[in-house]
Amino acid sequence: MTDTTEPVSTVVSPELQKLLQLFSSLPAVTFPELDPVSLQTDVARVKERHLEMLHIEAQLTAVRAALEEDQESLLKKGHRLHAYLAVYAESDEALSAKVEAIALPRVKRTAAAVKQVEVQLSAEGEVAPAPKKRGRPRKTSTNEGLFGEPAAAEMPT
Image (cartoon, rainbow, N blue to C red; front, side, top):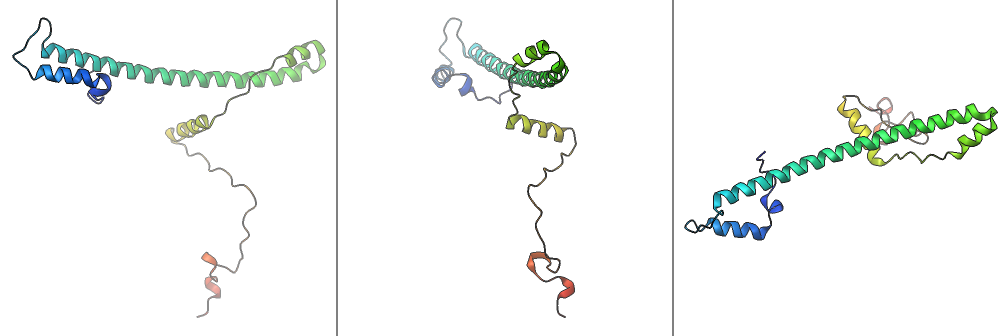
């Protein structure tokens, strides 16, 4: 995992970079257990760990999103169950009181969730139908053509 897409400056502090560059520019200088090759190996290891962390964070974000979707799905089913039980318990006052005492949280339907559904539909190759336009259709005159010009049949020759 030696991908270099992540700049070193975000992983290794700029001051530490300067120190490493300074030490690398002095080939005659050596210290016990500190040489330019081992330090570059350490920098590469830090970059690998950073990339690994970014990958794991992306996976965690995806798992969180999936968990939220599953929780929302379960909550929707819970609302349906609550409605069915309310109808079922109409003849039993004790059961009806128990059902009415349960207050489920509202289902969250965010714009991000709607957009994600649209993205999933397009990813599956299906075309989502266009939303219906609100209001009445426009009134158009039958003797007008495009852009309010007289229709071709009525144009003088």
